[in-house]
Length: 618
Image (cartoon, rainbow, N blue to C red):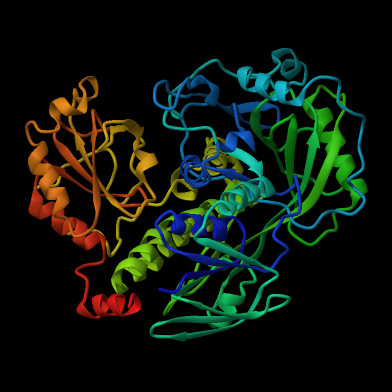
């Protein structure tokens, strides 16, 4: 059968290629560029727990080697610390909770962190204000994580010290976001693809036409390697100006320039090493248009990305203005004295909100920025693009191996577009509250606290603006049965990454078993972790459950966990290949398990699909 054609070699396209290859599906990646990326420290990405784990699973590389996990989060309004979250309080992935100190009591809302910067500001890349002192940047970065509170004396002298010692556990389920340069992420993906026999990358290949028929897709590229390419499916991961989307005549409505930021990447030391910072209404005077908000996000080796929210309009950000803004901001955070710093990169980041009308046209699909644009209030468009790739990969793989299931392929748009649309609606509703510039709302008691909660959750990937989507209304959701039992994970939501015993007796994390194109069946059996698998694999309900798993309409792996949040003993979880919960059943229910698995796969395979698959292999 013909390979899947992927147009675009950015993070989403490369992730999709690796995800398909892991499921034995060959791919051709059409890369318009030269095969390498410009190194820009002002273009960074913030990955949440699920998307960072996805990339690490596909590349086999720990992304912490290329990026930096924040030690904590701090938000200020004028001179007042509104909120602190200490990620460093967590000593492992599974034991201790994070602690959040809120100066006014618990808050709550949602979101993710800002995107990359585009368009360098000419002439602003000279070193400003001096250089660093001696010492290893890597050592300073590691020290930052150990000392997330920073220098209390510096904070106090700057008038930005904590306002309370109160702590609560609002951030108990939070993992530290991973911040890294986009070229570092793309480089890790490209390195993994070099060793993948099922992926061919065609550089210098610019798409100019697509032809579809019932049996496949033909694409033509121009350039040094201009040729015709034959594929089973084609996925457009070619960015905001997607050629694939235009060739399919798919509308891309939305809003332009929702927010604009001046961006600078610099090496310096701040009073809160390792912690990301959101500062609203900073109290110092600024040159040029006032900036009502500045964000500082740490990278490795004492590098920071600083973003200043720009007022509406198209005012030019000049090099002199940006350097003045840098010096004023650093001085404001350091008791009026600008510390030594080295300016590494600059840019202007403009946020657009757009959503493609259709994400599927026959055998052609859209993913990533080709399908949606978002990024206001700290949300991360790349997070959603990686989730697109994870959602689509297992469905394309199943169609490639077993013939097209139209309901399964249609579910990609139904699930992912609904999640992104809800994300955009939430941002559009929050923007007038947060960017209205005051008015009567600013005098309502608690409004500042609520605004801070929205922005904090936005940058940290929580709630309706940032948390991973839940496919509650998916066409792949099985009908409710009396055998269903409640657990803390809602049907359609991502499962918790608990430790499980695999079929070979090894102990692994549940997330490590994802992305292989198989369904996962997880039995909750307390006590199994203290005995070797051979002692319980043939006891109790295990033989009956193993037989039910073997009889499922698609390959499945049986795993055993000692516990799962909210699950009683002998609960059976059915999990999709992308890690979303299908259902939780009370005990072994072979008929209900089979029906749920069949629905998750898009329903029974049709005779036409089976015939097409057989014909394609002859």
